[in-house]
Image (cartoon, rainbow, N blue to C red; front, side, top):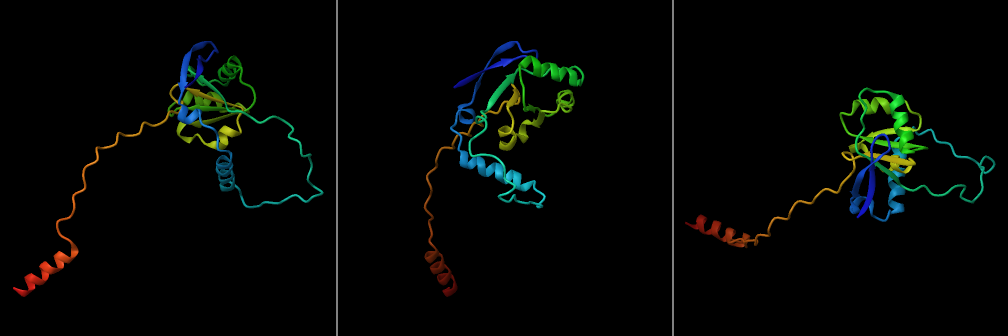
Length: 183
């Protein structure tokens, strides 16, 4: 299992947490991720598309920057006594997060939501709203211990019971009906 250091809001280490291999240790299926992101983006389009002609296209064939990686930070909890953007900015600075940051918050964390909502490069989602597009377009994803996804335990399989053979077949039922009619 892969482990990630858990930090406090001020950036000090606060233990480690094991990441579930079934979620964080898989090899990404790039074609499926492309389909999911394409579907998400297509669903929010207005339908007023326009394509560029050959004269309008700019750029070369070489990739201008490296591929983004999934950078994850896990903190113990957000400790905002009152909603203040200044405190949220200080927390991101203490954690050393730059660029586009996705903050995954739990339901009911209103002070956290209000603290981060005015920061330009910060996007917030509830844990149950986490999706592929928002993770892929972010440089950092910040979880708390409570919002860190874990694989759901599969329910224990019930013991298999032997299947009983039916005692009467459709032909037997028809024969029994004929016998009753004859009486």
